[in-house]
Amino acid sequence: MSEEMEGISEYVVSNALPGEEIACLVTHAKRKMVRFANGEFTVSQSWDETEAAILYRTKGTTSIGSTLNLDKRAISNTLDHLRSAAAASKPKSDLSPLPKKSNYIPIKGCKEEGLLSNDEKMVEFILRADASALKEGAERTAVVLNAEDVTWHLSTTAGVNAKASATSSHMVIRAFKEQGSGQGITASPFLSRLDPEIAGERAGKLASDSRAPQKGDEGYYDVVLDPSIFANLIDSVAYASSAYAIEAGFSFLGGQLGKKLASEKFSLYDDGRLANGLLVRPFDDEGTPTSKTPIFEEGFVKNFLTNSYYSKKLGLPNTGNAGWVEPRPWNLVVSEGKAREEDLFSGKVIYITNNWYTRFQNYVTGDFSTILRDAVFEIEEGKQLRSLKGLRMSDSLPRMLSSIVDVSSKAYLTKWWEVEIPSLVPYVLIKGVHLTTAE
Image (cartoon, rainbow, N blue to C red; front, side, top):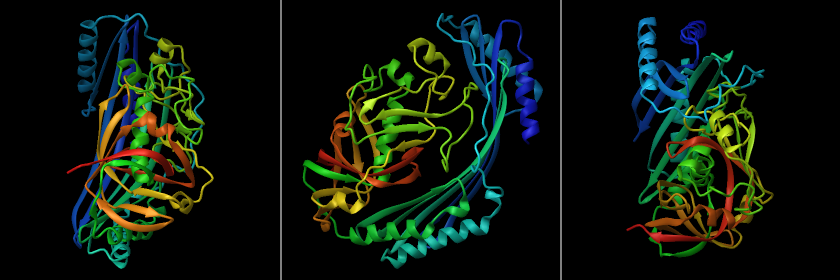
């Protein structure tokens, strides 16, 4: 398939006429998902799909399209449509040329051969997670295991001809006990390195401990955020760091470059070459090498994520995060602190383990709300006083980032349907977070 993909991308680029710039990214993705609920397997689904995405430019105009039909006639038709779309577009004077070919250093240790061929291992892992949760007192569970093997091939009229491949897997288990619920996650580029027992044990214990929740009260609380919910909020911070979001007015980071916006305890970076990351690639969609890019360093806003267009327009470094339209992150990493996890619970805090439906009321100020899901505990001096229900977090991201008091010394790789960007995040203690009632 790799040779076929190379042939497709090169064929597309070879059709460029004088004065045209073309980039073709061919992606071959093989994915598998297995679901398990209430003691039985409910879904087993596989995908095997190849897509050719094409960027077309000429005389200051741009058009973008894609096709799943890889027949040469279909590809030629797609190019004709892109030419017509570009001809109907208004030229822009600030377009930059596609980046020239670079030296792409391969990323080692990011692919597990035969990842998708081991159905028995996937079944075994799900059953082990379920058994671990039930052992902790859960009455029932729901488990989803996803695995994928992706290969990319990029060709451009600027001389780029590069390919890469990587695998990833992640399991999410939710456990239930009476009115309580809890979630556990395990993720790795390698299916064989998932830890289903730890994920199941965590979900089962949280469900059991939260089985009789009491209604929470609105107020301002010191909170400890679990990596699951902190990763969700960090995803929003990363999206706000995209130069596209800043230019479009959908970011609280506009005008903040170089300024201190967060606690000195907070550092965040994006890394397209992260060891054991779930989305690694030596080159971005334009052919710029990927790298480690600081977004926040000790509270200061250090970089926005850019592609060649926004790098030129804003006079910023090209961070290798293309996106032909919108620069986007690869793998997010929050720097670990020095605190032990148990130290974060030494005072009186609300421990929040999970959330969903994060929505912004104002992107420019970072005002948002999100529903607290699964186990929420009131804790004092390390002891659980009671579990809570019916709460929503209603605050602003800049205020919360500036109020980070401490960060744990261990980070956890997190990915699930509320955390789209693979994120390596620790536990965090934040002062004065506004919680409202959701009912």
